[in-house]
Length: 174
Image (cartoon, rainbow, N blue to C red):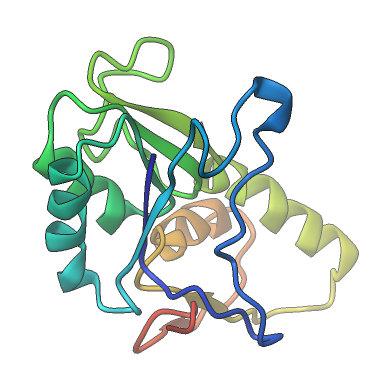
């Protein structure tokens, strides 16, 4: 199993996220019948194609990814090795990684959050909770989806002033 991440394995608490998932209930034991190869781009997305290619050369059975750049790199590295997205916040159909959510039609599958689809409802709740607010800031992570366009579309009927701001670098620390 290969894991390709944009960030690094150091957590803000000083620990490490290189803790393999608990697969014992599935009959797998790290080092016995399961090997997990971790690869970290250290915040440098340009490293991901090389890291994904390295995982494919290692003949992993599956590549696990959690970002658009990592998914793109893994998909470009192999059209055969299964790629599993975990907790991603982008639309894999829109980006061309899969044909549709029900039947991906490619080697890419996984779990995603539908953040943009919920944007209008979140903005509506915000306006209900704070009716006097006339101006709201939106911070956008360049490594994630672009919520600014979804917020602007949802705001057309609400009339908030929306000064958008895009972070100069990813909000996920390397």
